[in-house]
Image (cartoon, rainbow, N blue to C red; front, side, top):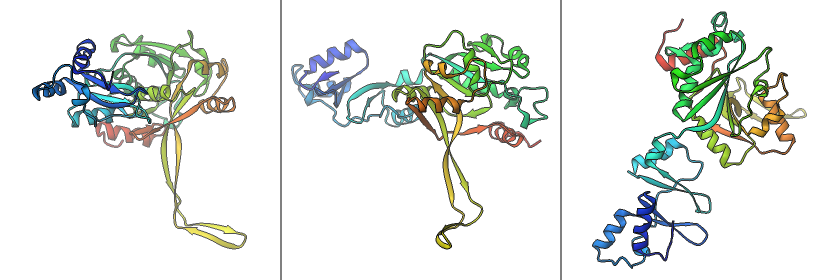
Length: 343
């Protein structure tokens, strides 16, 4: 970054040193005033400007910028549509907090975060499909649901996975092994008794040092797990829960009364609520709240954090999401992903 009183010569030196192909020009508070690229410099020189001229004479004052919370898909879309190789990231005060680079945003960096996938449930509601197959291993589009989850996360840079297993655990372990076939590392948490949606986290050893991603093994979604981690870090949260907007229409007209008097009437109103999507990010110190070897569900942990005054936040999802808990859910995702006929 350079101040507004820098020269074209200094801009050239900055471009050469950084190899980023862009100079961000800021004021004394770090607010973005504009950008300078190699093309801006060349056009300035063609106009007869001297290298000692100020960069204010070649400054592009209306660059396309992104807020920190903008999704990777939207950033890619804007950069592709506008043929940009760089896009500054600015906060609400227009201060520079980052820079998107086309090459970097396409290439997913490796993430150090551990991803724990809860895969120990019996899948009672999915019987007889789960009589001899653990629910996360039920096939969708030719491979187990658990493999879809893992591969999606792998494509985002995750490399270390931990599967919490219990019911028919050997089926999962025989299929995935140590993860070498997928160029990832897989280890296992074995639940002797059902521990709920959070209890298995007490078995983690060693304890992670980075935020942990936790997902249910029966949740298929297009969400980007890495973006939830980034969202979690940006808001400096202790725990983040992915949530989905759920709409439900009342089958009848709803009457509000005040005593015997009708106060209002609404015909078949639609109620909108956020529901737990079964995907979470937890700071390492949150794991202290998980009782060792005892059943515990994730909402219990979030409630304890709320009572303790910790920052717990919701990550609003708009992506495709299915909690495969019943046979019709399984058929739905099979139809969506590969057009399998109903069975």
